[in-house]
Length: 50
Image (tube, rainbow, N blue to C red):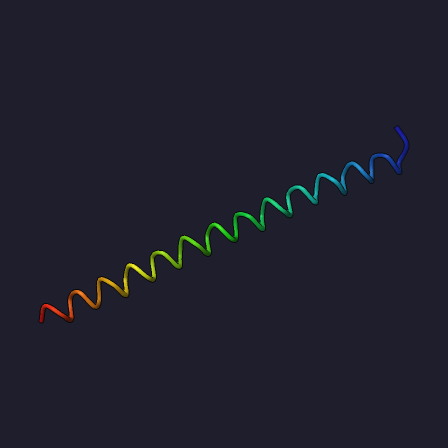
């Protein structure tokens, strides 16, 4: 296998990992937004009961 072929394979592999990391970042962002929203709702419920 030529050096160029190995380079292209590594580059393709890195792109896959990059998109996986992007998806993971989006998933974490969505999860944190859910947590924040639930915390805000819980705060409103607690304030309403006081």
